[in-house]
Image (cartoon, rainbow, N blue to C red; front, side, top):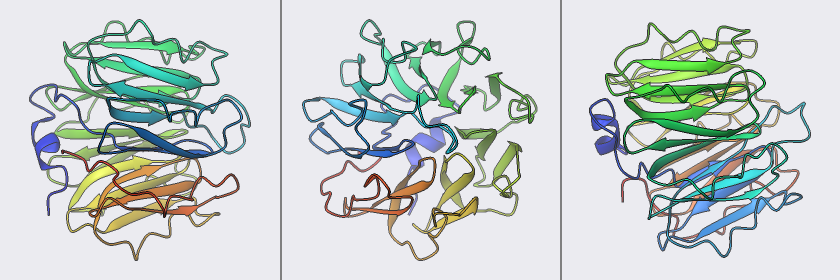
Length: 300
């Protein structure tokens, strides 16, 4: 089954409305978009990042992530509404939740202490921490998808090429030579690109083997945690590489998966029947999703 065929097949041609990011994983929390446009969340709620029960008419969700060694600045949740406006809850020290005036947004991404929004015209807006230039996206155009790592931001262009800003210490922004890309994802210090032929490319820090994806084939979606990388295959199974201290890469027995998300040290999967599965760090209950029902399937 081609899980995301419509989006993946058209991503390099035009901005797709409502890419359906229906699940999201942050440092210590997990978010799910339900088929009725409401949102549910579990995990750490110290900053109110799980206070989403009153949200309505949501079409996509994103959750701020951060490296395990960082204990703050990892706690906000973003919701894209059907009227192209944006909702936000959680920690806001750097203004990462100041999105109330955004409009005409078709996709959102949440990084460490910042939020990225893709507009229907293919331009990009950003709020939050910009110490590394990770919010310097005002000059971008012809963008069809965005991804936010800890300190760098990635933009997928209409022609299948990729642009990047922010910290480049480990060459995680060296994506200018990429082509035929249909999806991008960003972690702590690495960047992943899904190609139109179902193969995957990667740049950046590879201390834990999180960039060892060159042999992957038949991939239809990607997700990136701090130091691990997840790939959803066209047959509904899942591949994983990278840091596995908490078992966040133990997904070899997963079946019938239609969407994936990766937090700092946990991995979440949405099944074809609308139920959820999760592995990895569960200190704050961020993997307690087995009771969820009616989560929106991607593309629906």
